Amino acid sequence: MEAVLYCVRKIVVFQVALMFQPYHWDNQIGTLLTTCAAS
Image 1 (cartoon, rainbow, N blue to C red):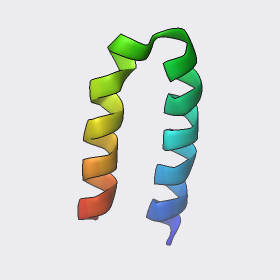
Image 2 (tube, rainbow, N blue to C red; image 1 turned 45 degrees about the vertical axis):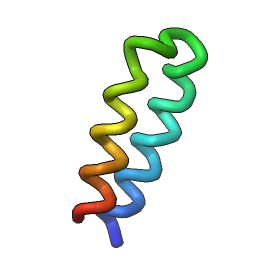
Image 3 (tube, one colour; image 1 turned 180 degrees about the horizontal axis):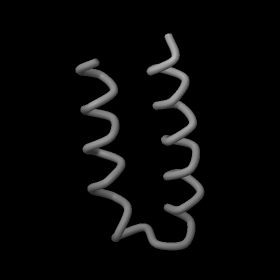
Image 4 (cartoon, one colour; image 1 turned 120 degrees about the vertical axis):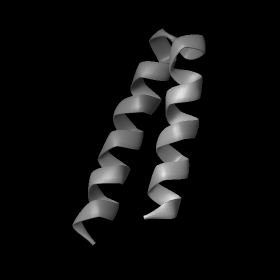
């Protein structure tokens, strides 16, 4: 459960970062979502 909450917080941070650097963060979010889904 804590791992899920950690992932959610990370995703929120990445979403905010997307507003400022969309291209740079795009792959990072894809990797993060894949990691969260696998765990």
